[in-house]
Image (tube, rainbow over all chains, first blue to last red; front, top):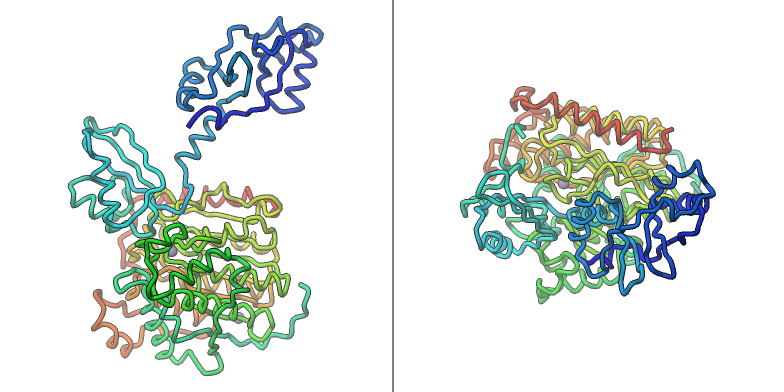
Length: 205
Length: 391
Ligand SMILES: [Zn+2]
Ligand SMILES: [Zn+2]
């Protein structure tokens, strides 16, 4: 997924000449945390509601005095995960999205979190099945074959490193109310289904 | 309500049709209509069913179904009902899958069940009967334009939409099936006159995955969807405590005109599809509570439907016989009649239980009972705290 599909496209901004008071009012009125500072359409800085609160004792001073000048930006065609990594590594709350020298949007920590929640969440009625497989090629296809054989449809699949060394965890959300046969197939194929209550019988979760 | 209600006669109605058993996907499918036959026989054996209780439903009409379903979906179900239909053509509608295979006559069988629940609701709302049961109903997973979790049409939603339109009634829908009552919830998600309350095993590992505390309704309906996701391995006491602690204050505050309760009995320890650890005790105690609330709050207007229940031998017949006995205000003997046991034991893959209530020591206590109970109590508190009309 690309930044352009999750960014807020209509960005409110201020000029470097605006007063702290004016900028504060914009952030309050529109409940936003960050304001890009533009000069002749070009990004020259970024000011946050926190910077503005720190400057509130001098409401008539200019935004230019308080803004951050080296603004970290991203491009509309960047991947969402790259924008997420940039935000995380630089400990910033948002990234102005810049294309052809113009600010075309802004993407915040919250936008990214929302996107992740949607990707990992339940978007159709499904049962969650988590499988541990050796960390080698072809494992995802092995399990996917079992799904196909049972005419089952997966709505999301996640792959990540397992806590057991040399293994990976595959998490499937499968469109079935009755995963029993699929779970048996996985076990018969020699893999383990983890954390599923069906694999336990006494509440020792 | 817009229409006057006659004095209820105090009778209870049992809606049934031999053709309910035509709602059948395949021989080895977990949703097995044999459970209806077994339950009906048990009820009859106990002498709890007379001619005066019995009502034959007509199928729901397209008009009834279209109140909650998409017309294109109806067309698809009708096409999928033909003997020549190709299962691969219906995937977009959730049909022709392993869960909800297509079968000839599917539309007729499904709309008959909807007609049954609609009739049960009509008998109660018109004042002819105080309580009514359609044990073939309870297909709570069906969505507006999608079959899901063994459910084609949503009979509950059809009945609720009918009483909303005809009587402008405020309806509370209680769902104590082990699975989240997602279909009914989403169909009335923005309606403040239909309060849906679902108690279920958390969606962490169980279908359909929804039913989080945070799903509370939308727009004007905000606060009128309530979810109580309980931990896997929850036992009787914790389950009943959650049900009581939520239903009593919430129903009192909401003041319904009708209570519709879905009585899926798949929270039982024996159920093969879920991971809760209840016994048949909750299937005696829950209808008792609903019955009491119905008399306290809405002149007894109470409709019961069935739902899930996949141990058809050891759980469903006893659970729903206890439900009907409560609706009828009849006493049950302690023991299941010997004739019935002999008749079904020959077919059963398990030894059939001989008492309605499971013996207290049937299952060893769950080792993490204390933590599970504590977690469920927190869930109940959070569910109540987020219910705006309580305060
Ligand atoms: Zn009564
Ligand atoms: Zn269920």
